[in-house]
Amino acid sequence: MEDACSRAVMNNDINISQNEDEFVVAVGETDDIHPNAKIVDLVLIAKDGLITVNDTTNNKTYSGSYKVQQKTPRGTDYEIKIDGITGYATVAPTEYYDGSEEPTLPISIGGYSLYFIPA
Figure (cartoon, rainbow, N blue to C red):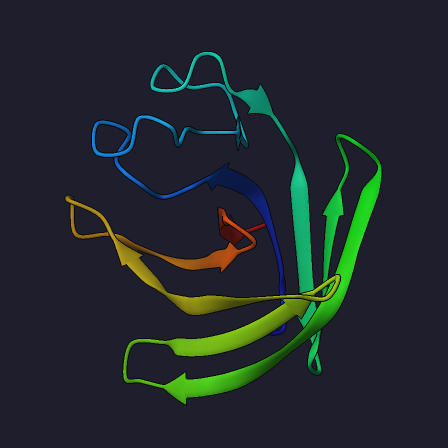
């Protein structure tokens, strides 16, 4: 985890029809699926065990640390701590229906899920 990632999609990663009280909070760009979601630009930088998330939309910065929990043939799982809150992240490729792949970094922390792609 030594690169910058951006264009995050923040949501709770739960099917809305299953949990009506959970909803998409923000997206990285306008889309038809979540027309009422606020657009937020987040940039994540992780290097040498330190992690920083810059919310350039709201001029906020969140800092913390990460450590490897497990390595697999397809990716690496991390425990992260940002502003005192513990969460989990995985760096792994996401495979699309057309067979293409893109490295992704989903993070689950503090009741939120964030999804980062390379900048």
